[in-house]
Image 1 (cartoon, helix red, strand yellow):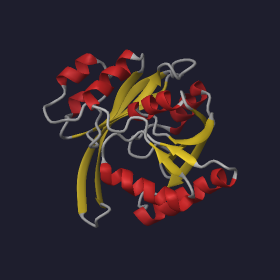
Image 2 (cartoon, one colour):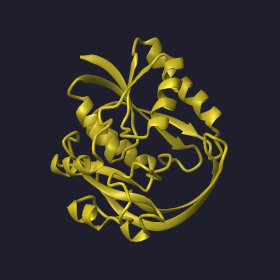
Image 3 (cartoon, one colour):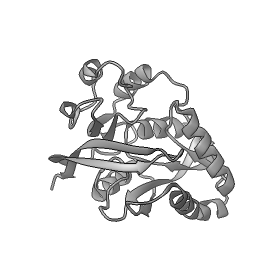
Length: 231
């Protein structure tokens, strides 16, 4: 089997893509970006300790990239290249990701990774997100919502992903949250040796002001559901 690195977020798409990738790749490591200040997974807000438990249960080495809160796209690209270079030097030439249909994001990733010396692979690419959601649940994965934006509604925060969740989603919301509508933490499934034990903590709101890749000002509000170690 060919060797590859996996860009890991800890969420449902990432988990399902890894599940698919393991059928044809030997995954040598999971690379995750975290906030240097808060020690939480970028965008998802999941604590580093839970990420560690997740990777331990999966049984694949975890590599972390810590980013400052005000990290720009250029800084992110440099840090990602720096983090990936040692793997390329060891002979790994492939990177697996969980993206599904955002063409501009795929092109961005492929261009940046080509400069590092890595070829990108997307096991879920082009899949119908309604069908992928159902396959994810049917495969035995267990996930909980840890962040939502206003298009979904804070009432979905902290809910477990199941068919009831799917049926309750507002019209226009992608069932895999591919447009950033919601993020998840996967705590059990066929790639895990044992469930990750956690408890639900406080729910908070954060406002973000930043520029997208085209230089446009973006203002967004995200509702987070904090997960804590159960013990």
